[in-house]
Image 1 (cartoon, rainbow, N blue to C red):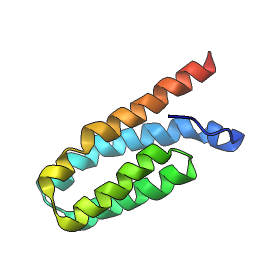
Image 2: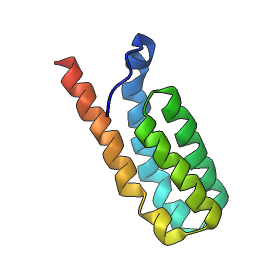
Image 3: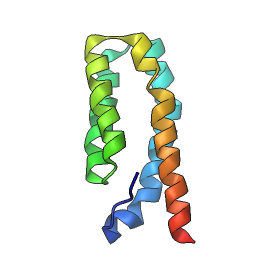
Image 4: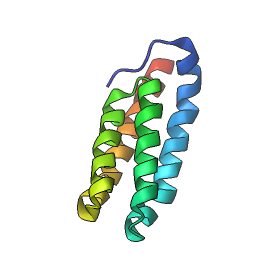
Length: 101
């Protein structure tokens, strides 16, 4: 994964990533457990759009996939997205730390 070169995005990306990690930790499992397809789709849609804006295309692609899974109400498959999403955001955190050095 590559971080964006835009200095404005670089200034905001750390908080952006922290917010997504927090949101996934707080919301994702509940959306799956309650089988809330509409809100899961909305989360995936927001994930897709915001990550594309921040240049995090790999995560945005997961958002696109998750939208389809939410639309299909494939709860078993939807559940499998939580860990990869968190891992991708944590990967960005590591890259951010490396860039500070």
